[in-house]
Image (cartoon, rainbow, N blue to C red; front, side):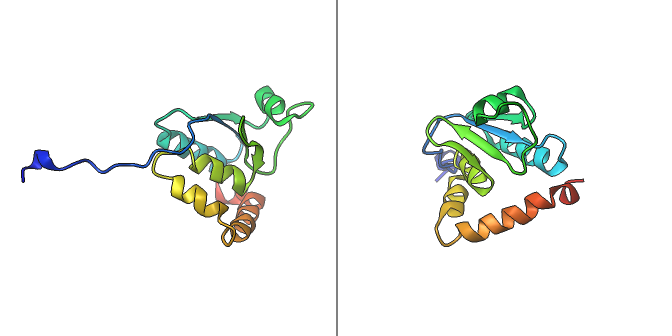
Amino acid sequence: MSCCDLEAPRVRLPETREPLWLFYDAQCGMCTRSVAWAQSQDRLGLILPHPSLSLVAAEKLGLPEPRPLGALHAWSEQRGVTRGIDAVASMLMRLPGWHWAGRLLRFPLVHPFARLGYGFVAANRHRFGA
C-alpha cells in the first residue's frame, strides 16, 4: 500500500446547512474570542455573527431597540430564537466536526448541567475573558 492509497480523514458535515445568526456581547473578550473560534471552524459560512447591540440583533430577536443581552442568542428560520447553552448547541451543530458536541449539549441528561455551567460562565464572563 502506497501513501497515495490512504484516504484523508472525513469530517462529518452538519445535518443542517441553514444559516445561524449569532448575537453576542462585543465588549466581552471571551464572547468575541468564542465567536472568532466558531468562525474559524465554519468552512460552510453558516455562522453569521453580530454584536447584540446591533440593529440586526434587535430585528431578528424581536426587540423594539438594540439592548445588551445577558447570554449568547441565536436565530434561525427553523428554530427561531435560542439563547444560552441552546444557542451554543445550535452553533456547534453547524460546524463541521462539532455536530456531536451540539447534540451532547441537548441530551436530556447533560442539558440541565450544561445550562447551569453556561449560566455561571455568562454571569462571570467579564472575569474570564479579560
